[in-house]
Image (cartoon, rainbow over the protein chains, first blue to last red):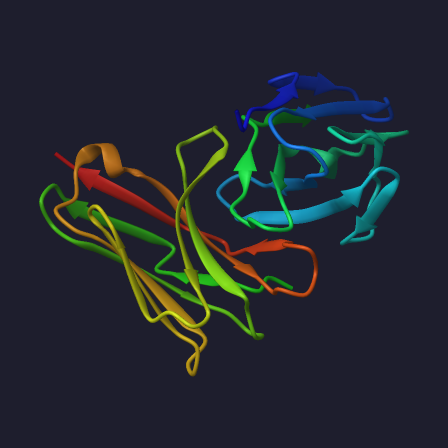
Length: 112
Length: 112
């Protein structure tokens, strides 16, 4: 199984509120994990990627952070959401040997 | 900055016609991949072409890669209404543990 679980599917949060999006992966150990954000009608912007527990690379400066407390768990967080944090957030995984990415179904975040 | 850039941004064709989408990238790659995204969903991997390959086929899909021009094309033959989706190229730079950088995508509409 290459299943990636992402939740929630949709989320509406007020400006200034905290955020926690969780992604869990089945079917492989030591995956590379990714958080992407997609604005409406646009491509995917890589936010964070992780090659192992506790190892996080940030691709762009922003209001968000990521953590990987377990091998198959990747969390996207914010202490205080901004309007510009609205978007479609996608979790994905690859492996070192197989760079074909499998994606979760995404979380649509609206900050109001 | 985005590694991959697709063109056209949008393409509208009739069922039965062929659809061609192009992708250009900036730096050397290990492989290039094409993905499909239905509206509001996660991305699904279509095909991967390695840097030492020039052409690859999968069903009605044909991908070409020209590393001298840093470009790739995706051809969908005999298109169907069900092919309506956004299509993205993604490049694996090969030296960063399989990190994938996505382009902005081509929105394909196939009219019945």
